[in-house]
Image (cartoon, rainbow, N blue to C red; front, side, top):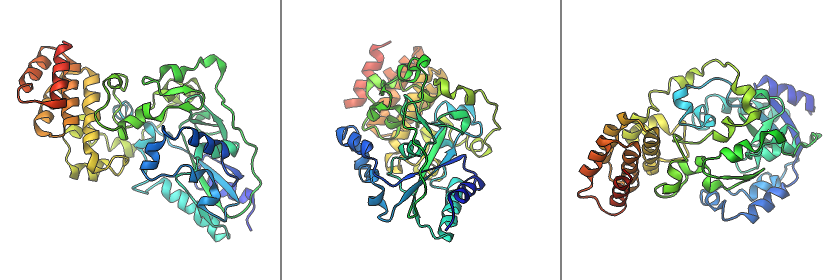
Length: 372
């Protein structure tokens, strides 16, 4: 049977930034938190992801004896600025659907384990960040994210991958504390535009911009539209303002060529006008939390971002989209966005689309006109 050092060597050979080991004991604190806050996490269970079952590795894999945690830095190369301002970095080079990069390396690592008599599972519902902390690989931030001890200059641009195995390894010393300095003065909590962060390791997920972009129900509430800013899918605001991430953000990185090749497809004007064929072929494989049944959410998010840009050049695009859409959530946000941009041209457009409107859409147009 292979030893721990051989597994560590293989992880680095596979390109992972760090590796840690912990027991397969239940994550009782996480289970208690989830039970206490069931209402806030009900949406996750509705999606079919049983987080409570994931707190006990042996419910996932009865033979579980240890957990190996691999740490991947997902921000190792620079992304085009036009992408970073609208999309969370962790989604920009996500290959969970295309399986052309990270997935291959995880598979290679698991094949190595299997060839050495170790069976494994990689569950999505196990608390990966908590597993990484229990494996001594870093600490938590006040923004509820995990900060590495070794990768991306001890920043939070990391993805822990928990591999549950049927072989017992000596566990590493846990590092479960919040590692933020006192002098940061809760920068992330103060800066969170929607007030989702409630304190160290405390978040209201239903107010998080990331959640609102891909899981929020109905048209985005009025009070949250301006705070959500230019984000279309995901959000990095709490990471961008964090002093612990400043060293990595200051580093000059080579450009990620894969993401650079996607810039044209993710142009806001194209996203606003895209049909299902374009969405399924070019967008969904990279950012897959929204299906083509909910393509309205993409268009609503794009319209809101255009409005918050205050850029008059978007008004013709918004009007064209208004004339070609029939979803009232999209139409309502298009009207709001035109009003948010403001100016005589926007007012004329709104007055032009007011006749014949009704219901939610009419209310949005009237609201926009009343705010000139």
